[in-house]
Length: 430
Image (cartoon, rainbow, N blue to C red; front, side, top):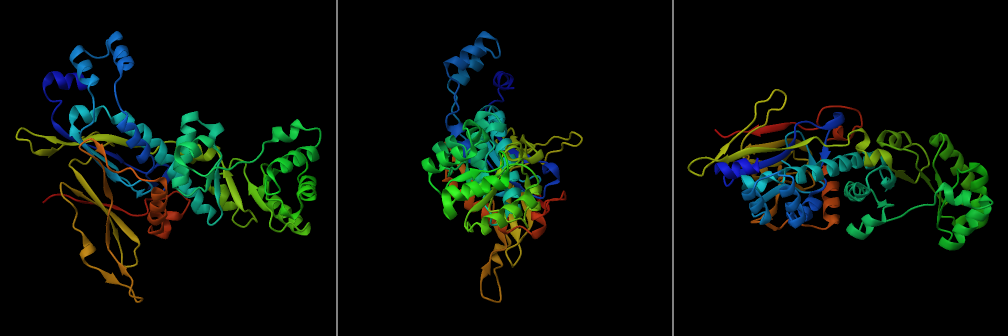
């Protein structure tokens, strides 16, 4: 596409590309934006070096003029997007890239590969932390995905409410808090379970977490409390019927005087399994496979489409495809979230070619005098004239997610399949 557009003289046309999802995967009621920070880092470093150019030339992928153009590639356009951690819905304009066609078109795979994966993980993580309530969730999925995806998954999970990760690289790179427990291999290494527990407690202290289901759970719990005393930090259950087993272990710990010893459960949990354990005396959930695979929806289904380009006199003209089942909505978009007087979201409002009418001018007061703005703008500047302006600490995205999820209607938090929690409404130009 780039080579043909350069040859035709259309590569320099001012163009607007948009990332959006036509639907929410898996019958989910809202999605969560993940990966914005990673995308900005990747965009800043996006270059065609000598090795890449040499490969393209040797294999005759593109011609000489295109190679020359790529050798000097620097993105000089503008990008807006939903803030990382924000909730989104079908057709939300999650990312808007405005630049020449040539500069913008080569970013499609970069943008989609980051946003589709990270948003899928963030959405699954949000559902899991919703089901967990006040109990912390620990990300433990590194062994179940690609080594680089594992780091990205830990980052997205943290944005959507997970408290810690077992992935030390995510801690080093992004500052995600890290934690972990021993594996069955550590117990099996030693001649007896007593030897294994003693070694772990001597090394890590009484506040450590002991894995107690290698052999007999009851015997292991008694042994752990005997060695560490009532100060034993936690025990981990990784198999069996977790609901009755957690109740039995809680009763046993209490009878042994270890009332403050916590119970951590793992074993292929997803949001539904977490919800099923709500009545169990569980203190934390360790989640692996289901999280890093999106709990059944490993991609967010986002697309990157041209929605406007300059015409003969330089005016941006909307363009859209008409393919059956894959219709796009042309035009530069603006978005806000419409909320009622109680601050609860009622609709995603998208203006085409103009900002939608803002009802925020009508400020309503509750009986307590607290004010609520009816509308909340969603798009924030990320890149201006090629310079990154939207980089932010991970904690900001985490806080944004908490606020965005809190303003959704209660139906959004249901785990069953259903329609999006709020409708998407278009305000087309007159």
